[in-house]
Image 1 (tube, rainbow, N blue to C red):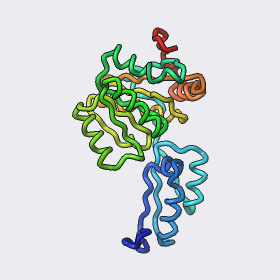
Image 2: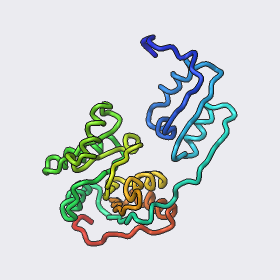
Image 3: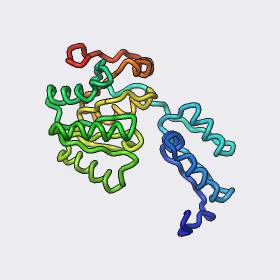
Length: 238
């Protein structure tokens, strides 16, 4: 658009998928630039699994008299997903991850971090310790993300480390383990993450690492799913 190769003046529909992330992850200025080039008469549709109030407030500044369509939110994980939480000091998280992978003989797991830099650090640490890992996040090219995901699906990559925005749409058959290396700030995101396992009637295991400063997020999750996640008390990195 900036280079003059495409003209948006005839666009009839503008669809923003994962609107919460697109409006919250530094894309807002680019989105406003695009909207400015679109015709006044068009239909705009925002789709999102989660919608924080501040994001909805921002969305409403971009929409005119919008109609809101809600489906019943997923507030509880599948019953066949076993959930466990480890309380750990922040500096011990990577050691705990290696311990959990090795002691439980986990050779295929999806690991979530909150930041791109955090994902890269986890991957570097795992690879250094002989555990084949790759990261997918917004700084990776589409080709690199596809290669990583395909390698994970074929199990040539043991551990896939993802940020929430890059992980949208990931669907891996027979994925048993999901690990929250960092607990998400929004409780709904937790349900969305661990929904990657326990699909099609299969069982799954969701493990979460919680530091003292993440306990409020854990409390929000417990309230949302209406249960207290079982705590693993026997590990060396409390």
